[in-house]
Amino acid sequence: MVIVGLGKAGCSVAKAFSKFPQYQTFGIDTTEDADITIRKKASHEEYDAEFPNLKRRLKFATDQVLLVLAGSGAISGGVLRLLEQLQPNPTTVLYIQPDLTLASETQRAQEKIVRNVLQEYARSGMLESIWLVDNQCIERGIGEVSILGYHDILNQAVVNTVHMINVFNNSDPVIGSVTEPSVLARIATVGIVDMETEEEKWFYDLTNVRDVVYYYGINEKELTEDGTLFKKITNYVKSRVETGLNVSYGVFKTTYEQKYCYCIKYSSMVQSYGELLDGQDIS
Image (tube, rainbow, N blue to C red):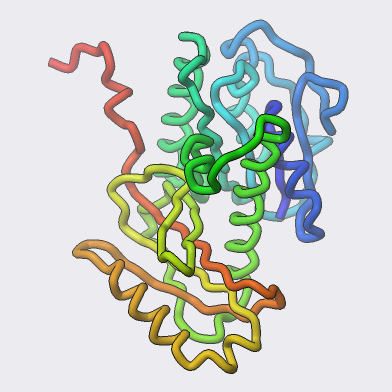
């Protein structure tokens, strides 16, 4: 898989993915330390109108692409032009929703436009899917985070979770069956489950969920010796079943000492869709 980061946040996440040998990574930004440096523009609109042609730099045969970005920066205005250049590679977007509490009015407007447009692209099938993560939700899930390295810690939580889900999706489970989500459910988020407390810690408050998958990573010793494990897992998964919600799971053998549970859920509904109607006369 190829990871393409756009803007400061996207480049940071792409760099975090580079520790895994399964990924080829590119960071696109206006700074010299980016893998691909582009000219800085004055506005969101200028990036959309004048985004450079990077096809020569972005050649990766038919590999799947994960495009990573946050929407509040002006450079996110070039995302649709970049997506055009990534065709025909099957592309998923990992969208980072920043804390907008102290953002300017312009930044909030840019973020809302990008987030909603990309979700519509996913729903239409122009993207494989969009995975939404919210920095505030991630912080709540992992606990107190120090100021130094704040974003690095949040980025690592996202990268490790996405990486393990990718690994499990390309592996055969020891038991269980991971079912494909509805073809209409292309808006997703990821999370982790504390296997001691059974608390789910999702990285975005996704609504109107249609499909949920739980990925259990457990070492061979526990898989062999813990006779209660299968019952615990199946009882938990069954407890998550609701009307209109498809739930599946897979148990995978790992070499890690600790056991883990990662999860992903899917929706067919644009999140925060009501924002699109703010201030509009729909009578």
